[in-house]
Image (cartoon, rainbow, N blue to C red; front, top):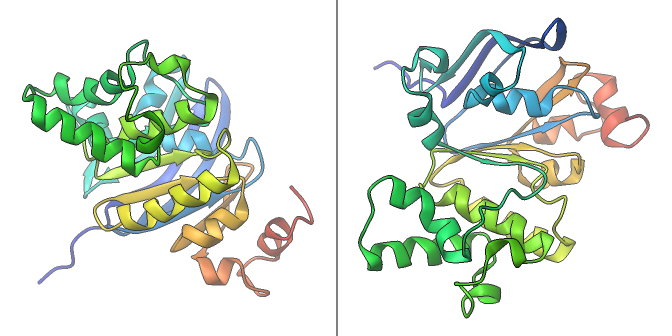
Length: 254
């Protein structure tokens, strides 16, 4: 019996904005129901890599990539319906992007678009996602409040709840905790450890210890190139595969 393909696979991925190359021949795989941490200094191509997964790089003038990105063995560029692809991938960016709707409707929006009309089912989805994003206890009595009136950290958690509302198979997190206090961040990290049972998580973070806590494998990007791809315990050891990894995770440079 042949082994199942990795959940995500990147083959010789290079990405560009116009003539500027931001990723250079990056190749790696992500097993199903695992967490990969992606670390590296600013402008290393981390966010661009995420945008290749759900093809939102297509929205950026001059944005393009070569090589292949495969989801479950199928090339994302070969998928005829990019919107169907994006429904399979939850995406949370560093700063909250709230819809001008109530807290409830922010979370219910995507399921409604997918045809869910039963009030009880929608109520269950909203509560589940708000609990997973560690926001339920703070908003359960004001679900009709405009989402944009929440604090910045609450809005970011609402963005996470919205990303979870379609039960994605891939969850991409790009500096998700930048606007969230440390205590809440740790609570969400505990939730992410549970979520990996039902989805694969791609975690971009500048908090290297967050990658150490959460990731099964760690990819270190620098200037768009792969410096290291190792099991996390190797990447954070005293003897990673590349000395630059040791220097970066220990704050010697970057």
